[in-house]
Length: 495
View 1: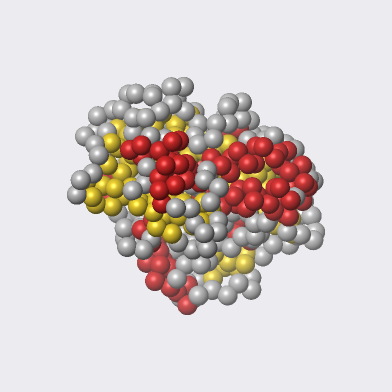
View 2 (view 1 turned 90 degrees about the vertical axis):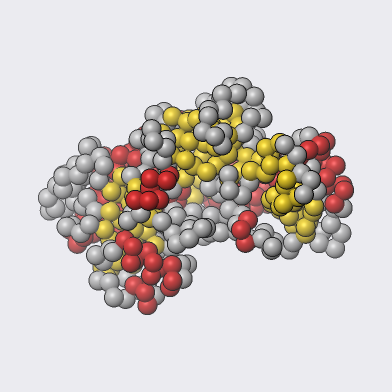
């Protein structure tokens, strides 16, 4: 297999690779630092990485991959119970962390390898790194397409987190497919403030620029000031989650510098959850730039995207990426053939972007795939006449069967968010003796002292969608429960 990061070999020069705040590394410095890490971990099967938003995390993961070892990113916010499960399941041989980082008790029994990054002196590296081997004096390590690159633990909403084993070919094919869809090159400079224990921030946000030979500027902590600064000084792409773009949309009316910076960006990309249509429209109106969305999962990396040369249509995640097969299926397993924007089916995908297995869980792995190799995503969607995919929710929590109709919660949530009195919205179903399930709207009002009336919201949705999609019950909250990536946790809503 060719190198995941050819720029480390082809051009170990003074070109910038990574910047976190005031600290940065050129490709030559990254090759040296990652090569040192690779020498330390070589021969291990898996190592854990204490995945803070730092240069050290990026260097640790790149060095581990160069050594042909699988990295297990750890969320620094995880509790002892979750960490204990992940460590027991993945059995890493060591943990990589920045010198000075205090690690929780659950990690103290592991060998600790401090990742040290010297950013003051530019290091000349003769020959860079050898293929997928380690840098410096390291000897190349033979690796194959199917060898594990990452073990990323899923959220575990119905049990302990499962470790998705992501092979090297999935990373390479996903990043190359995105390069095709987004016209992503080594000239691009990416800015983001995403966490690095998840595929969005780590695979797309760090490994993506490095595979292209471009550079990434990580904000450390997301803020509109940082977005303005970086997009005004050479950055060309912005990655974010809907919470971040919502904050951008809220700030734009009073921040002309932010609007100008966004207008100058080549590409604004949102992912990890659906971006509400009203935030799309507010950003487009203020900047003239449309946010594009893509769709992926830990187990599949990226499946679809709006293309850079396509129509950035609000509420859709575009078309399948090169190499990805996608189909919609009904509950009985039959294909949903209609491209009518209304016929709902579960998304199933097949292609080189898929994970290999859930670590130590052959039962869960088998259940996740059909007999002919399609991965059951659990997401439900419709397809527009031109093939654009619109996700309407999760099969387990967002597919509501009411009055004989199959209704996706996502489109109702978008409709609610278009009401001026609604700040946040989530939609679920609950048992109803007449309808089977009734639609319940959970609303965070703009003005808690004077929320929009239940009937007003029901009529608002009925006018925009259809009468059978109106909420029958509205419940008001101060805030919706969300995870670290900004996704609404519907299972945590009050019962």
